[in-house]
Image (tube, rainbow, N blue to C red; front, side):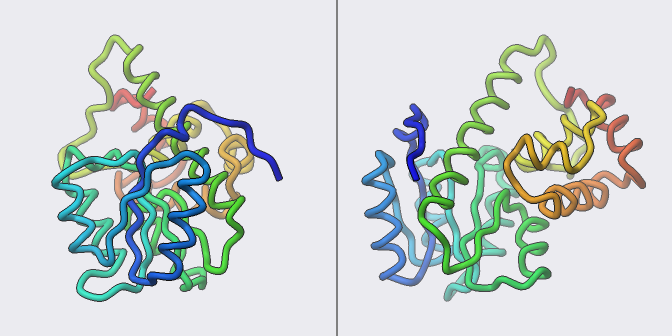
Length: 214
């Protein structure tokens, strides 16, 4: 399978995983695609690296010593200057509740091991392009950008989905636009309902307009 080359392939990726064999394979593969790859063996080490430099995307395992992936991503989302970072979970924990927890914790994509390298690459490209579009759109806005109530932070994927919801698109249409499953979109919408206190999609769309997400 051949993927179209993209300027995003000069991006820097932080890979947080305690499996040295997987780290070596993923690092080599992504570097062959033109990415710069930083590595960390667990969440604490990942956070330390994020204090030194900010990558364009994070790939994170769930089960790791010292600090697991959920705790790591939660810590990232709590830091304003890092909260925009797209996060891709890469985990052997593939039950539905595991995937939901990963998305609710702040992950944008949840891939289950074993995975196809081509799918990993496609998800990385999609996340980077999505983040670039969001930044470009916000740069064109006359308003300074979204101003949600204190304590409510949405991930880049949630923000994108919220904008589509506000336009009246269905979950199926959003899934097709973002190249993800409808269940993934439903999980993100459910998570946003919980975060915002809205009871349905109509209220969520109004919330998006009130707080300048569209």
